[in-house]
Image (cartoon, rainbow, N blue to C red; front, side, top):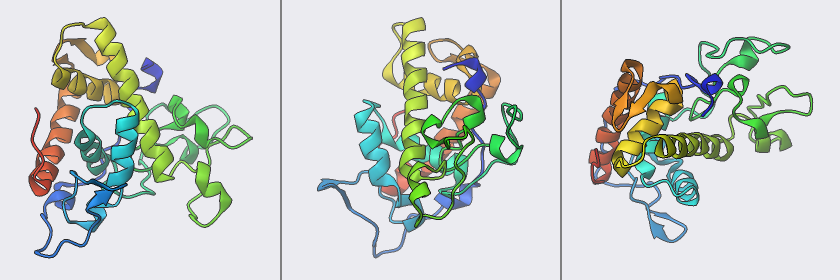
Amino acid sequence: MLVAAASFGCEFGDSSDTGSTGTATCDTVAECGGAANPLRTCVAKQDAYDCQIISLTQAASEPDAMIFKAQVSLESAFDVIAISPDAPCGTKVGWTIDESKSFGLMQLTPACGWLKKALLPSGHPNLERDETTPLWATSVFNPTLNVDEGVRAVQVGRASVMKDFPGCTEAQYTLMALSAFNQGESSVSGCGMVSKNGQNYIAAVLMRYQLLARAAGYDYRY
């Protein structure tokens, strides 16, 4: 991941959105395309994007879909139209401050070079919020497009740290890729070795992971 694309995560939620394990009657989706949904917590807000997360992580050969659900919990509290309060890469030349912020479930920043599929012909980000319009398909907020790009960002970070630091475990590479996602590749210096800010981001994601995994009966891997 390019250093210019670093620091495009934004911690939106608090721990309250993962605090419930659901009621006795679970009415959220139990399957994704006929297969069991291992991420299901029985909380509708939390489970709404499980099938997309599972499908996109499988397509990217990412080993742990729950990591991405935990990231969504931290980055946006499962709010599709979440917008960061800041512009992590500054205001892009020719764009407004509002166009230069981070958007959606994974809090990705077009001004940092991400979400290129969400740019209008003018080169500006598509900030459409109305799901009923044709523009929604390429909106920065579209959950499939947004999560797909977030998964790709972690995948790019994983490939980079695997190349630079051979011999680490799968779990270490996952956490190193999280640091690269949030702080840039320069935040990683070896197997399980990341900067202080990278450590803070990893800890925040894993806190969400533990809560979600407990609710879903999902094995904790870290």
